[in-house]
Image 1: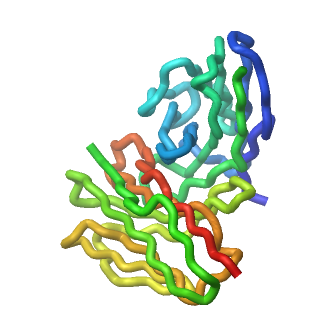
Image 2: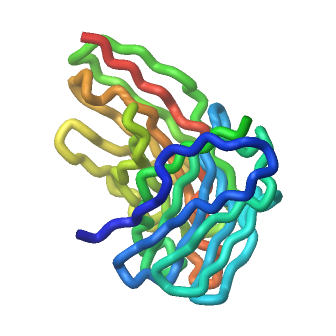
Length: 114
Length: 117
C-alpha cells in the first residue's frame, strides 16, 4: 500500500530535549516536505527536499533541521524544542515538486513541548 | 506572494442542509493549482480535489461540487444534503505550477464545519 508514515504519532517532551520525528514513504517519491498546523493559521511549510541531499527552507524553518540521506526518509529534527513548537506536524511526499503531482500526507504527529 | 483566504471560520448546519465553503486566493502566477482537503476529527488530511487554473469547468462528485471562477479568484466548495460525517475542518490550498517552483502548498486557515443531526 502506497503511504507516508510518521513516528511517533504523539509525543510529549520538555523544553530543550532534542527529538526527531521520522517520515518515510514507499512510493519512490523525489519530493518531500514538512508542514506544521496551528489553530487559526492553517498549515505552513517548514522545510522541503527536492531529492536526496537537496533540502531548503520553507516558510517557518526556525528551530528545525532536516536531512535527506535516503530517498524514502525525511526526518524532522528539533535540536532544542521550545513550547512554541507545540503543534501538529505533517510530512508529505510527491513524485516531483510540480503541482501536477498529488502530494500524499502522512497521518500527522502531535507534539507537545512543556 | 500567494495567499488563500477562507473567511468562514466555523459553519454550523443541520443534517440535509446544503452548505458552501468559500475560498478566495491571490497569486501572480498565470498557471497554478487549487486544492481542497478535509481534516476529520481523527486528524489526517484527506485529499478531495485538485484543479488546474486552465480548467474552469465546475466539478461534481456525489454530494460534493466545486465552483471555480477565475474572474473572482474563487474556488468554492458545496456539500449538498450534508451529513454528520461531513463534520470536519476543510482547507483550501494553492500551489504554483512552475516546474522550478518550491512545490509549496499555501493553505487557508480552514473552515470548521459542524453538521448536527
